[in-house]
Length: 591
Image (tube, rainbow, N blue to C red; front, side):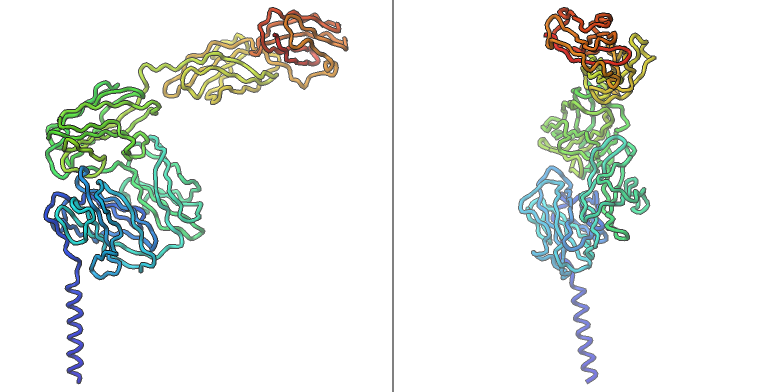
């Protein structure tokens, strides 16, 4: 009895061991190594995969085992991915399988993403972790196929599969941010933003040089600004991370890295490449020439001095060793370290190895430095991508400096006018004859020497209100345009004889009954002083504050005075009746 029981146990154990030894995933194979996955990247996971320049099947033709690399996520989480094949000139089918039940089989229901028609390379999309998926590790297979628009999990002809590990984690109470993004780039600052997945209004940001170990970077402990403005050093590549702070003691996992860097390029085969690149007609032209294939199909020429200005058009000529080719040129105008489709400044593809492309610098481009990428790819209809791998070709980066137009002149403001004049304030306006948005103002007593007056730098509105003036004082004003990097204009023609009024609070009771008629008037106006109790003076000034008529004796103990105004131009004037005890102002119309 004991012997029979022992034999049964041994038979069961042998069968179980045999089952596990023979259980393995189907061997993926391809009959060609000419088409393969060059890079695979995920975002939105915890952690993420960044596997660049993976090359021809690392394990066998058509297959690479990268299961030591993992991407993680919890049920319901969305994982974004990008697959780049070795050529950007073809059309490919893509599939991603995850063995959710760990039965060593990639079932049809376990295809988490799949194309039904061929697409471009690089190709980006997303998939979600199924609701209720158990925590644990699962095999993930990523496939790119040049022939099949919907490739299966176990083999084809012109294709490659890469295996990774997918790690399902428990759903956190505080979710990490998603959709990390950089915007509003300048040479010294960027705005780093994200999408908040909870109701948090505080976050922690960490950043450092590209590739730094997370946890050892510079930390901004808590910020209540999304997006957050970061100070950067021009030309330095960065990694950015962020996590949500949901409450005291409750923070999310880190999201990131967001790689603030220009994408990598590579080629499958050496040989064809750009041998000469030159510009003609820029302020300072670029020049590049080589007789050898550059390592990795990439050349960094950003140390070259290459200068243009907004509105300028210049030519770039290229020479390609390898016959017909396509050339694209990008300029990173928004300084976000990404060459976007909207930033293509020139493109040309034909059978000629020599090309001339025209580039125009957009009007409104700010002064500064911008990265330009010129990339070629073999083929008379080739349309190279700024990133990833091509079969044959090369890419060159230059640093394009936008400087001032040598013919630029900062225009002088004209037509300076003073209005809304009181005893201590006035509004100064002028005509801006260029594009300045800042101005300098200098003023002083009428006839003062420029350079000795009161200076207001950086006036940012037109009209501009000036205060602190002295009542009953004549002033002179100058305006200068501040074109910032374009320098400053000459000073405007002076506006002088601007007389401030007296403080209206000084109006005495005996002036309350003073009146004028007729109003409007064409040739004569009468000032009535019923009190007849004091000598009064009369002044008329135009809307620029210039005194055009003075009468000092007409109301010396008189009840009325008649003023002849037919010599005045038609318009609106200020009539001021005053003495040492007070004043009264009237708006009159000369018709």
